[in-house]
Length: 149
Image (cartoon, rainbow, N blue to C red):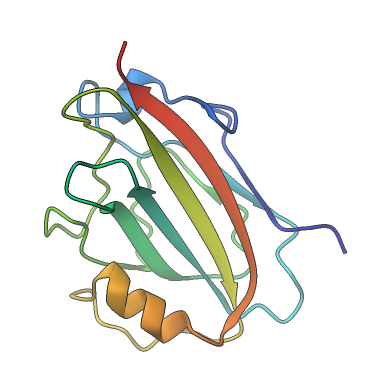
């Protein structure tokens, strides 16, 4: 089977994220497309993080219990059937790229899991990582760049 893929019509892998998806624009999530989700997947989880943040990894968005048949998260998605966890701002929502200086990488990671997660929306990325341990069937990533002009 082909490798699971995560893409966006808004930007290419390692390409620049358009301003409308950032704090300089509408601060809404870009459309994301999932391909080749493996058989046996019970749910998907998605994390968006900035490894270049001055104080270490900054979490912009975390979602889990996405249905395994979902192939697209539309722009400005807030799917009711998923759990949206707490980002580094302490909010249960998407927080777009907003680098204080320079260009940063924003990595979207999609995980195919062999279970659904019994995690409350108060959970952080660390708690999500622990809950996903030993349940990841496949992983895909998409990196966007923003900042620095």
